Structures are given as structure tokens and as C-alpha cells.
Length: 232
Ligand code: MN
Image (tube, rainbow, N blue to C red):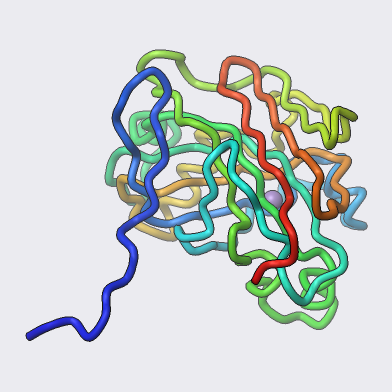
């Protein structure tokens, strides 16, 4: 039997300090995981269980890449995020075992059609068209935690054209990384290649074509992307 057409292989992210690549399997994202961002989105921060949404692996964009401005939005937002790269298999793991599933960390961007997300939110519909957008998941090189340790605190910041727009500390995450990984493993069997975008701090805002977006997290490689022309 022959396949009637071919589709691209998995997206692969570079691993810092090596020639190896990390194949991306699934992308999970956490909503409202910094109190100030929850407030700016009109919600009260609390310790309700974390909630998740997903994106296709093919929405990955490497650092120094271009994010074409997507169709059907006039409010395309940046969200700087710490990203956890999963390297093991696990279901229903506790927080200690969760750490053992982590391969490494990277800087990421959860680009969002905010107008479509808010429309969906207010009508109680799924967020997919606001969040799972082509080229909406830029990711910097992945740093192995065997070399750099776990990321529990440190500055996370985003600038647009050199102007700082988001700045916070990873210690401000409402749900810590081990808590997120443990909780998510109660919903899905986590698998090598899975990514978890851990949520964004306050200060989200819109970009336009030609903007340069830079995300920095202490101890990790910088991620930068340019916003391109309207997607062809
Ligand atoms: Mn996000």
C-alpha cells in the first residue's frame, strides 16, 4: 500500500550545546498561571486546578524565525512563557516523579488571536481558533535539566522592538512546574517529545507585521522572532 501523499515529519527543536534535536510530539499550554495576568484578563487568580489547552506540534517556529501575521484577527498577542520539555513516559506521577520526566526547559511564545479567544471564552466555546494558530508556538533551544537544573525562579521578560512589555519571576507561577507536570499526568500519559507551555505573566499585548519579539529567561537561550506579513 502506498501513501497517497506525504506529510512533513515531526517538528524538531535544537538542543542547546549539542547537535541533537528534540522531536516535538504534542503541545500542552496552561491558562492563567500568573496572578497579575489572570487579573488583566478579568479573572480572579486562585488555586483552582490548572486548566490546559493544546496546539499542534506543527505550530512550532524556531528562534530567528518568522511568524506570519495570521488571518482572521486584528488583535494578535504575544505571551512569553517558560516551556517544559518532557523526556519520559508517565501517568499519575507525583511531584517528585514529575521532575524525572523533565528533559529540559526553553523560552517560548504562546501567540494568540486574542479577539477570537475572548469571543470563544465569552460564549463558552473551545479556544482552539484563538490559540491553536499556524506558527503560534515559537520555541528557543532546549536546555537539558541534567546540565542546567530545574527552573524554579529567575527573570522572565519579553520585549517588542527593544521595549520591555512583560517582566516577572518564575517564582510567581501559581502552579509550579512539578505541580503542573504531576496534574497533567493525571489527564494524559505524558510522552517523550511533549511540551508544556506554563503560562504567561502580565503585560500581554498586540503585535503588528515587522515587530521583533524577544523573550529572555535567566539561564536559558534567548528566543526571538519577527512578525511577518499576512500569512499567504
Ligand atoms: Mn499562554
